[in-house]
Image (cartoon, rainbow, N blue to C red):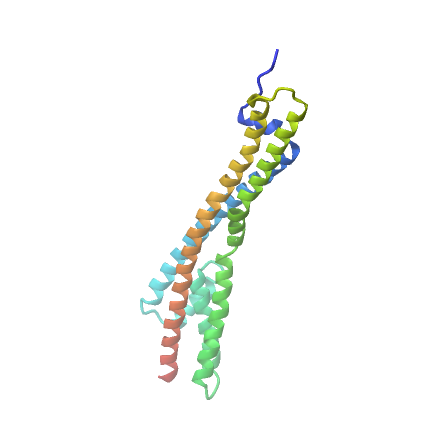
Length: 226
């Protein structure tokens, strides 16, 4: 009596060749890491946007810059990126202003460099793990395709000792191989969608930070000439 092959998902994975199983395990691990970074980045960008809103509301409310600077220093670790950019710029400007015979151009150049350095650190923090999502989105389909090709090769290799080959002989092998392709797409598609969405959100935040640095520089320059 000929036994019917187990074509359930679990059965196909369990009966797959070692190489295909390793490919599936790799894709599963990459997919789980990808989803972890997707949710983590979602909350990070949302929090950065909320913190920027809070800081800009307070900054443009007319509060004294020295008072705002003290608040930014106290909230250095809990505040947002604009807090730290403002803190770095105002600290540098205050150092130059306290020197006798302040050179306004040198003071503004140093202030801009300080803000730009902090801005770059903040952008590096926001862009963390984006390269991982991009890599998962571009490489996972090919890894899954490798598992599929390997599985199909094994399926047809098994026909060498079969006198009369039928679809029933190769169907399980092909089915288990195609699971690798499906897992590759399952890992890649969310990573690509998340990367494109987050890259756009980060670009908007970057533009927002740069606009603030320009506006703040103009305010400090007017104060220096006053």
